[in-house]
Image (tube, rainbow, N blue to C red; front, side):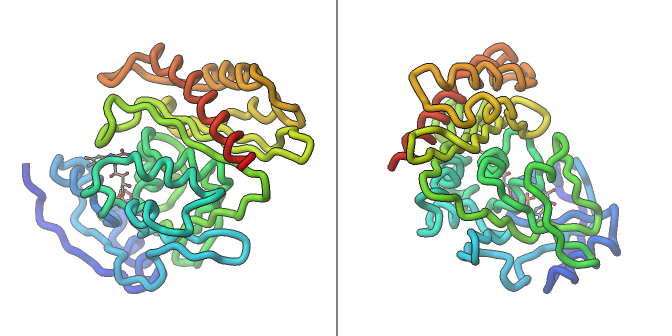
Length: 290
Ligand SMILES: Cc1cc2nc3c(=O)[nH]c(=O)nc-3n(C[C@H](O)[C@H](O)[C@H](O)COP(=O)(O)OP(=O)(O)OC[C@H]3O[C@@H](n4cnc5c(N)ncnc54)[C@H](O)[C@@H]3O)c2cc1C
């Protein structure tokens, strides 16, 4: 297997990147960390003649605190997420996921933008960003546009991004006080194993101990990350007790559409969803009380 001849274009601005994508479409792909793209090119899957790099675009890499939250540039690596002092407190759930991904070598190169835009159903960051109500900043030749992250991914390797569009950044709104969020992941071993099932959960506790604004999102168990809407319908305004999360776990198991593959059967994955949902909600509740 070899990579056929390619022309590399170094975009110097978001506009430039969008124009290059438009000019060479459909024979072009963006190259971020390349941990997925290079594997595809070696396998001659999604073969293209042009690659557009983003490294020379000012501000596309790094994490900044802005007004009402965090702005994470699309080219920010997984290692940078893990090591940033800004990823703590209410945002700790991002590190829950980023710290469990792949190997150090992959994490040093792989980017948040590639993890989202690659739209692999078992990608770790999308469910986490969905329960944080993250917004994707999408850039086209017409300029920037904001899309709820949940609406960006439509299926395996499918997003709403058009040929001339790229992901510029993710904006994560600052959560209110007494917010907690956590991620529960099951892989076949610790380190460098793709997730078999994942659950991200977030909630807010009020002064009386009642729970509000509950979000649960599942990964690796459906063609795209799925939200469990019943979680909030069931829990909103309730005071939590030992059984509170059982119904949500059952609802999550119903929402999941797992497949059977070498990593686990559909039945096994569905059971995992129930266990991980309770685990993520319990950790989120604990963090909300800290
Ligand atoms: C050994 C190995 C282990 C892995 N383990 C994990 C794991 O545990 N968890 C996990 O989630 N993933 C894992 N991955 C998958 C991959 O590393 C991640 O999804 C990574 O975050 C992809 O980022 P990248 O920068 O390398 O993307 P690239 O490979 O550069 O790009 C991926 C896709 O996204 C597109 N793209 C990239 N950036 C943008 C942008 N800004 N706007 C629009 N489109 C864009 C590219 O054109 C391409 O289609 C693993 C991969 C390997 C090889």
